[in-house]
Image (cartoon, rainbow, N blue to C red; front, top):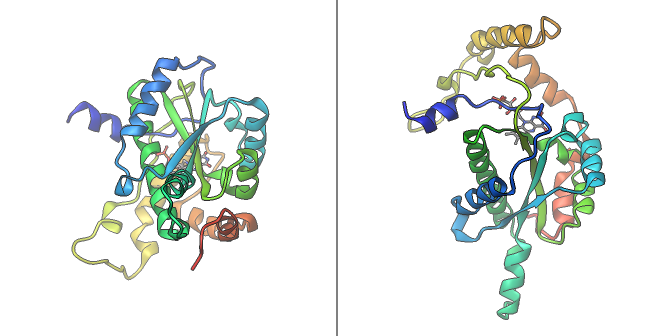
Length: 248
Ligand SMILES: Cc1cc2nc3c(=O)[nH]c(=O)nc-3n(C[C@H](O)[C@H](O)[C@H](O)COP(=O)(O)O)c2cc1C
């Protein structure tokens, strides 16, 4: 097995970091990796906002309700960005409004996600660790305000990273037979039955991770996620529309 694959198969989210600063040279390397990532139709419809301001970090921590966000040595917010290309087209005399299409939004969302993941692999190869913060979308409208996001931009997630100060266990994944198919989608008879073994594995994982303090299964987590409702996240389309995209 080559070193890249070994690294990818050893992936784990890191949520506790040393105070050690990351060299600017390394930050630049990571940004170059983002820049080199494949991008839908070559349009590069994403941007990255590096958070340096302490008060902004505090506000994002409040929104995420995850205290460890504040202690991430580096925090990059990845955003969908169609604004830049709109400007370019308008400066060339473009009069239409097709830049508002949801198709563009999804292209930008995908671009941002791929760049972030490419960066994550790169930083893991440099001995660092990272955590994604989808939780900043708990109040996506406020994130737009805090970051002064113009029209045709929208936050995707933040990535916090640095040198790990913990050694998390590898988190189990469900059997690939449930998510990898040939030629067409496969619907199973009984999903609870199919994930039974995985549920047991997850219970064991939490038992050892939380010293028996947490008893949980994957299926219970799914239920909890669907039951826990955040109205601001559920109304995400309203904010996307407010940011100038055309929902239709
Ligand atoms: C899009 C996305 C958003 C995530 N958001 C959060 C988050 O808000 N807070 C957090 O602690 N972890 C977050 N995670 C990390 C996941 O919880 C983690 O990847 C998952 O539990 C699997 O664990 P592992 O990465 O250690 O294998 C996020 C991951 C992804 C891909």
